[in-house]
Image (tube, rainbow, N blue to C red; front, side, top):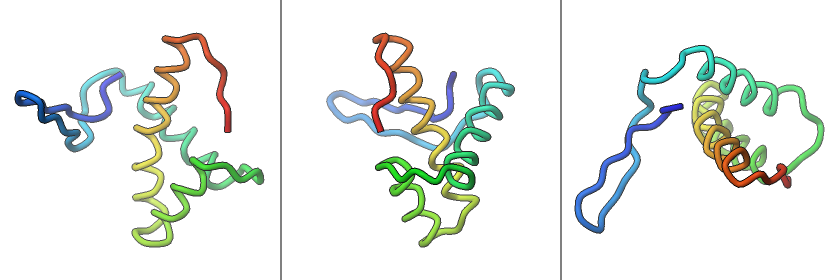
Length: 87
């Protein structure tokens, strides 16, 4: 799942824009998960609070798009390490 472009030169590394590589279905599902977190969950947790701050500054659509790659990275780490989500 490639949602963000990564660049590295020597010791410097940075994350770029969202790419269109990878499975489109997975990207859509991660976006829908981000949308659900912002619109349907009543429980407050750090990830939702972070996205709501972005929504307040930049709008709800940008917050959903910003939350999706972060969710993807968390899910990737959970699958890789065998951990469960801790809000």
